[in-house]
Image 1: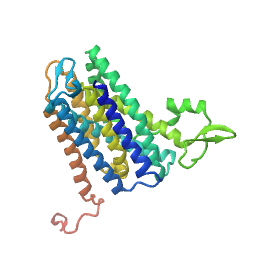
Image 2 (image 1 turned 30 degrees about the vertical axis):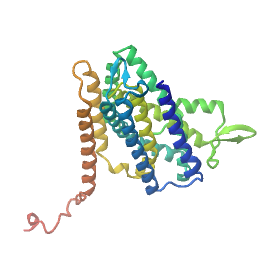
Image 3 (image 1 turned 120 degrees about the vertical axis):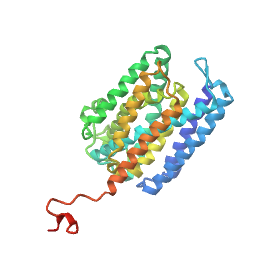
Image 4 (image 1 turned 180 degrees about the horizontal axis):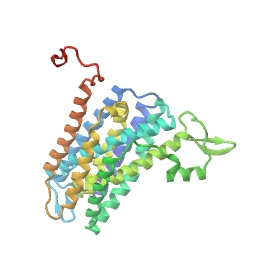
Length: 335
C-alpha cells in the first residue's frame, strides 16, 4: 500500500512543475533575484510542511510506512531524518550552482531561456535519482558491506574536492553529448528556446539541448556523492527520495538568486569538504557506533554556519594597502 504514497508524492511534484512552467512562467523571461528568492522560500516552506506530514505518517504508521526492514521508526526520528537529509542534500547541491553557471556561460544560453533548461533538467533528475536511490537501497539491504564502499567514496570525494582546481566544462568528453552528436546533427546557433529543429531537411538538435545533456550528466555525478551521503542519515528510501527532490526543487531557484554571488562564499567549499568527510567517517563507523541523527544535524549545521560566516567576514575586511602606501596616521610610520 505504501506505493500510493510514492505515487502521490511524484504527482505532487509534477503538479508543482506544471504550475511553474505552464502558469507562472509560461512566457520566457529572465528570472530576477527577488522572484527566485520568493520561489525558493516557497519550496523551503513546502519542504518544512512535508516534514510535518512525515512526522504524522510515521508516528501513526500510515500505509505501513514506519516499518522498514523489521524496524519501526517513530515520527520524531523520521522527521529528524528527513530534515537532516534535506539540509545535507541542499548543502551539497550548492557546489552545483557554480557548475551550472559555467555550463550556461560555455554554451551562451541567454538568461531568458535558462529557466526552461533547468525545468527539464529537474524532470530528468527526478527519474534518475529515483532509480539510483532505489538501486542504492536494494544494494544496502542485500549487501551490508556496500556501506563501507559508500563511506570510502565520500572520503575520496572530500579529498578530491579539497585539492580540486577551477571547474572546467568539456562537452566533447561527455558520453551523452557524443552519443547525441552521432544520432543528430547540431545547429551552430540557438533556435530560440527550442531543443530540436531541422537542418538541411533533417531533424537536428540545438546547442541548448546539448547544454541540457551536460547538466543532466553533471547531476548524475553529483548524485553519486550526495545519495550515499544521505544513506548515512537514513536507509529509508522514501525519506531519501523526498528529501533529495525537495532539495533539487529549491536548487533551481537558488541558482537564479545566488549564481552571481557564489564567488563570495569562498570558505563554503571547506565546509562541504568537512561535511563529506564527516559523513564518510560516520558510514565507516556504522557497525561500531551509530552517531545520533540529532548530533549529526548539529555538526553539519555548525560546519555550514562557520563556512558562511567566515566568507561574509572575509568580504567585509578592507583590502591590504600596497607596499609603500602604509597609513600615514600609523604612529609606527612616523619619525
